[in-house]
Length: 468
Image: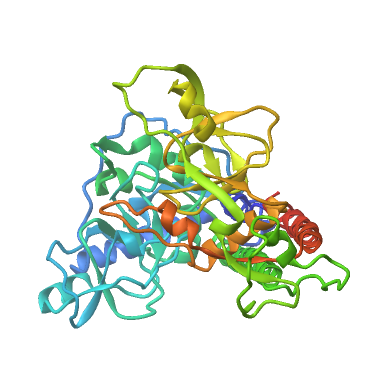
C-alpha cells in the first residue's frame, strides 16, 4: 500500500468538498469571509496588525482553480490571515532561552520536527517572533521540490522562527484546515508554478504567497473536515508504522536465519554425513584439525585460503594496449548475488593474463573496495574477465558455493569484514585469505542453503506485498 499517495488523496478529497458531506444548514463561507474582513479591520485599527499592500489585479474576472461545492468560496490567503511575517535573521546558537525553528524542522507532511534545534537568547527577537499555537510556518526558500512546504505549530514547546520561514496566522479559520490545503497536491502544483528558481534553490516571497487562492468551506464544515482528516491520517500513520515495523522484522529475521545457518543451528546434523575433515584431507592428506571452536560435531573451523584459491583481476592501464579486447567486470557491476550489465567495459588481456582474470560458472566474486565484501556467484554459461578490485574465489575442493556467499553476507552484516588502506579502504588478498570460515559437511552445506532460500523466499514474498 502506498501510504504517501493515500495521504495525498485524503487531503485532496478534503479541499474539494468530497471527504465529508455538506450541510445546507451551515452558515455559508461568504458570511464567514465578511466576519473575517470585519475582524481584520478591527485588528488594523487597534494597531495590532498592518494593512497589507493589495496587488494589482490582472483581470476583472478572477480565475478560480476548480469548482467548489455550494456554500464554499474562493479567497486570497491575505484575506484570511494577519500580516505574513518573515522570521529572524539573527544567527542562532547551540544553546539559549528559546528554540528557533528553521526550514529543516518543517516536514513534508505538515508537521514540525523538533530534532536538531538551535536557540536564541535575543529578547527583542523573542518578543517579535514568538509563535502562537496554531500558527503556520511557510518555507519560502528551499529546493525546487520542497519550496513552500508548510507545517502547523501546536506549541509543543516555546519557539521563534528563522528568516527562511514566513509565519501565517489565520483569522477565524481553522488552522488545521488551512494546513490541509497547504499540504495538498493543488497547493504543491501552485508552488511549482509560482516559484522563482535560482542556483540550487527556489523562492516564493510573501507577496506571491499572499495571492494563493484558498478554498473556504463553511466554518462548521471546516471543523468536520479537520476531524475526518485527523482520523484518516492517524489510520495511515498506523499502517505506515506497521509496514515499517514489518520491514524491520523481515530484515531482522533474515539476519537471524544467517546467524543460525553459519553456526550450524538452522538444520539438524546428520551423523551419516561425511565429516568436513575428509574434505580438507583431499587437499592435504596430512591435515591435522584444530579445535572446531563453537561449531557442531562434524564441522571444522578453518580459513578462507584453505578452501578457495583466490586472486584479483587486471588493473586498468590506458598505456597497455597489448592483447585481445574482452568484456570485464568492475565493482560497479557486482551487487549482492546479482550483476548489473548496463555498463560493461572492455580492455585488452594478454594470453598469459586470461587464466588469472577469467571468471567461469560457479566462481564467487567478492568486492575488494567500495562496499567491501559485497559478493555474487557467477552463474552464467559464458566466461567474463575481471578488474583488479574484484577477488575471484574458486573452490579447491567440493563446496556448496552458495553457502559461502551467505557466509559473506553474514560477515558483512555483522561488521566482521574490514578493510585497510590510505584514503579508500580495501580488502587485501592477504586479509581475505585469513578470514575465518566454517566448513560443514558438504551435504549439510547443501541442506543449509536449501533452507535459507526456502525461508528467504517466504520473507521476500511478504516484502513484495508491502511494496505493492
